Image 1 (spheres, rainbow, N blue to C red):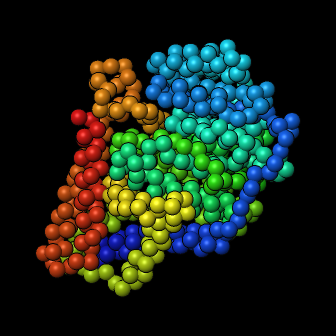
Image 2 (cartoon, one colour; image 1 turned 180 degrees about the horizontal axis):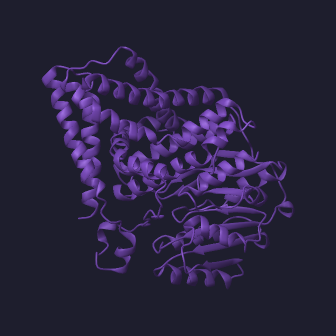
Image 3 (cartoon, helix red, strand yellow; image 1 turned 60 degrees about the vertical axis):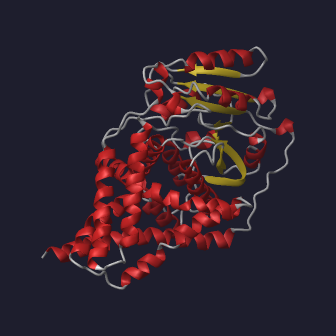
Length: 482
């Protein structure tokens, strides 16, 4: 009696995952169609350059705030047309460090200010919105604390706005300051490179709801205000603002050739926290804007469907968990899925191809870099419990607290003493989800044993990947806190 129910759930979950595989296939087709398009930076004289404000939102970033401010000051742009805002919500000595650096540059004639808030109302979105009232620029560039912008960033981005009054935002590609620090950081580079080089390129060139990624981008102030400014009702304020601006009819541009290096999270706990926040924020935006996107007639049907599926992309983690939970008893019952699942599997091939093409697009040594793909696969699987929890919280409307992703510069987190202020502010608390990860690793191992016991080897690779993925993330999380 239970077999029909389990098999139906299994087929629905598999179909859902296959749908996102088809999304990857659509991305491949559009990429191939638009791959030769270029958007050169228009020449412009310094006298015609507009006023620009560079905003640097920070919260307890003592290890990287100096690097960030130094990079902002070194931006190649007419000094009389550049304002730098260090937007500080810190509760530790970051404020003192930033204040000293700001005063040093003020003494040298740099137009820079420290805007310190004594509260965290609205978190990053609230800080940016409050600081915008003091901003003097017609264009607003935003850099998170883990970024180190290249000196020519403004020269490569701002001129695009001048002759295109409907261009509301320009996003650059994220680079990596520590790509090969570990297997974890190497895996992240593959994921991010695929998103920017492939997905963002396609979204922009095919007008499929491109987006601001939260950092290393420039906004036209008029667009930002027209879209309603920064809102703090989601933890993905960047996607929220992007969607509102796109629905208003503003155009976005992604510059794949302009690179803004950033530091990658170096611990699985930090990465898990970051991905969980993105999963929750994306789902919140899906709930908030789904009906508006679907009924918006300014965009094609394919663009609207693409946007909705992209926002719901993290639900693949929830579907993966469902697939695992029902597949183990199905293996025990000696269930063999129908041949239609082969078509579902073929649809999923597009996503690995996108990862490989992302490396091929960007690097001469791409063949050497893709050897880290297995690490990415295991990490992606291992994130399923924490990301699934975030998705459920977003759907049920649970209130959120913005948890920063620790950045260490060259600091080794293991060297931070646990009884210091630094450790208290920069170490993430142990998350109970690690228990679920361990249990799922054991559960998948049981499923793998059942595969051999029943002689049903079809699901064995999936079971092995789940066992290794959940086990790796769980044990790495525990190691982070030893």
